Image 1 (cartoon, rainbow, N blue to C red):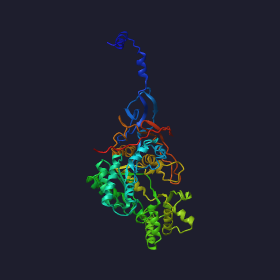
Image 2 (cartoon, rainbow, N blue to C red):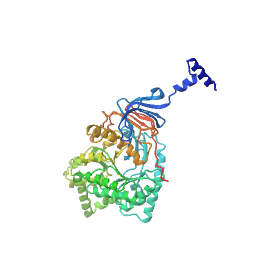
Image 3 (tube, rainbow, N blue to C red):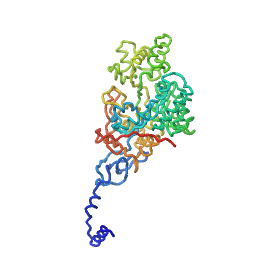
Image 4 (tube, rainbow, N blue to C red):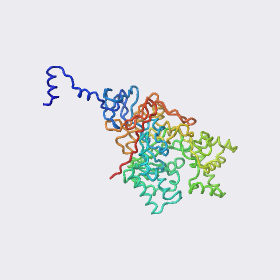
Length: 536
């Protein structure tokens, strides 16, 4: 018997035991880096909330109790009494282009986001691998992942030419998608309403999607049309998913323009029918009645082939100018313009910052031209030739927002861009997407239960990406956590005054480290670049 063993026997017989100093010291050493205690846990699965404690060591949840974990076992304790403890939110559609200059990703982290998927709308980085490698050396505030972008790849091979690819060009694009997948892409995105994606046909997209599918990737689609052509756009996306045998996401799903309001009844029925037939289709959505994209979305895509220089040449031809102008008028009446110049708002205008926050109607008044779509079309073309602008279009119906949100296959995503306070007058989704769902649509409007909402912004999104250890609170899950007050959480920014961080979020923990602590953004940068592991 060891010396320590003989000691234990002797002191037990004597009825008194005093631990040796080494044993006492070991017992008093903290086992965990962080314990979150007294919280109400919503675990991301959609299951009912429960009261419990969570212990974190390193970047993992290592203990979960419905009772109490002694604070003496932790280096630090967060008392979450009266608060919700949920997985950190996963933003399945994020414009991360500014990330090299804004690696802290504060506008995302402050709204509870711990993982964002970049490269949407066909705009993924190229070359893919070197871009991710460069981010590995950045002090990231959140975790990031990326999609390969169809538009980026097509532009690298074909420029902005309005034609089908040759056999050699298609083969090169297929190779580039495959290379991106092996370098860590989670799938492929398209922006079929944007240049040059608009010039592709369905067969081209199917061929490229098959490459992504072979590596276990997903397909996310900015539809070819979201206004009058919405139903055809949904049908095309579903056909791509069926033919390529790839899981798909109808991204930022909505119905644009008054003539299409209410048509989500039809599009959701199409989704349900496709799922019954075997197509793995899901949806993501932002919780606002306005979209945001570039000014040139008001110009017929055929007129933009070859870039601004070619557009200028076409406008010098009276017949082409008339056709282009009529196309702009049609978009102003029945698409992003919503039939009212007040609905078209400038967000960022590099060539005239005084227009930021103003509307197309305001610009027409300033210029002394009639406030009609016909007169405004000339201003739109002038703005595009000046270099374009970022816009907000108030053309979505609240009924469609609620109906899409309530659908069981809908996930929450911001479609937001990383933003610094005071930069332009951007869409408030950049700051408030997830708090808005939890505050307005859960607490106030009762569109979803809290458990449903959290599931739609955590577990569902993680499952779509194949990230089994994210979007959950359970032993073994990555310690990405959002702690918030369900009674107070809300978005604060408005379309007129968007630059406000939300309220009600006390802590945001990324890989076990708080990046938001007692409501304040910290200097910690524990984020990582996640790479998809291709299917062998």
